[in-house]
Image 1 (cartoon, rainbow, N blue to C red):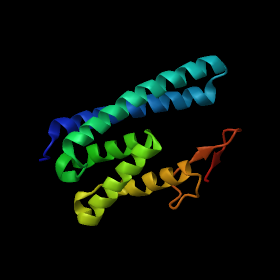
Image 2 (cartoon, rainbow, N blue to C red; image 1 turned 60 degrees about the horizontal axis):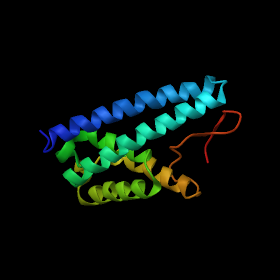
Image 3 (cartoon, rainbow, N blue to C red; image 1 turned 30 degrees about the vertical axis):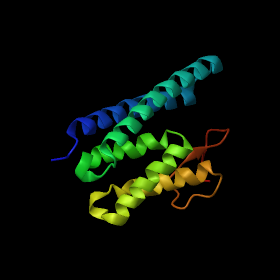
Image 4 (spheres, rainbow, N blue to C red; image 1 turned 90 degrees about the horizontal axis):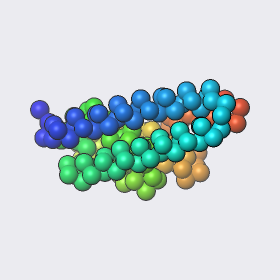
Length: 146
């Protein structure tokens, strides 16, 4: 039993919507030939993503920390993934919360998210990744690691 079941369910729903739309956008990126249409889709996705991440931040303020006891593993994972799609400042704050949780009680922290959030922060700071979790694509749509 988690302390905040309603917030947990909402976070999981936000993540599902996020991942569904990101997959659709990924397919559009690889197969789109109309750059204007692709730009419009990206703008709409960005707007929806911003709404979801804003709601994630509101929920995080309500629950104070995304511990397993507060919201469960699935919702803690949702917080981490949604944070990856937010600003660098938000991602840093969420990463610090996850790091602090892990320091206090690794059994109550979704520590699996720490490497991907750490690498994303480093990429956004234009530094090399520490764990190699983030895949990027070059102009030829080939994966690159750093």
